Image (cartoon, rainbow, N blue to C red; front, top):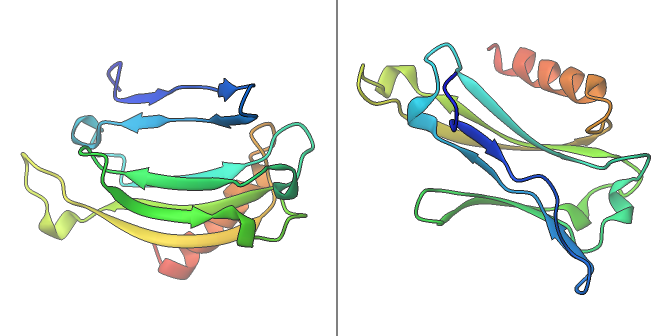
Length: 134
């Protein structure tokens, strides 16, 4: 995959406001055709649970910064550590050689796993894939 197709900001902390965010930018038009699915998840880190995150939210925006989906993590089980938010998947039947069409599907499956322990999140994704027969 060429450089710049997927960019992650890392922690962007504002200690004065006691807030932080991560930004992930994906250039969908530059993704190799072999990539058919992009799963979006949020997770805790270093033993924390979702209840340790103050006023958490996750949102997905388009190129024009329009909001495509939002998940309010406050409604999730605070003892869990991860949420499989949604999946972007190629709509092969609506794509051409020049342009890929993508669809967004909300999931909102609260479970376990973390940035330092992907195993449980991968299991959640695999269950979802089997349910969808993908």
